[in-house]
Image (tube, rainbow, N blue to C red; front, side, top):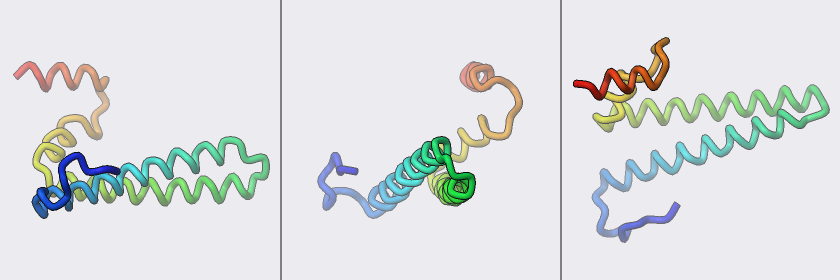
Length: 99
């Protein structure tokens, strides 16, 4: 991912967050690639390997989400609002933005 602001002008915190966000994007891309490959795999044992690899990438992505939650207050707030809820997501958003 390219820096939009010259690297040397960014704070250490901004560089660290960029590192986490780029890593998350890479993990999400890997999840998508393994998922697609598993979907078209004609060999069942290869399909299982691809799904296993996809699931490993999901674990990595979730670890990065947790790091972001612990280090960026807005991630923490939004995750508490939206995650692990049964109501429709748009209804949660409507309720969250009313106040």
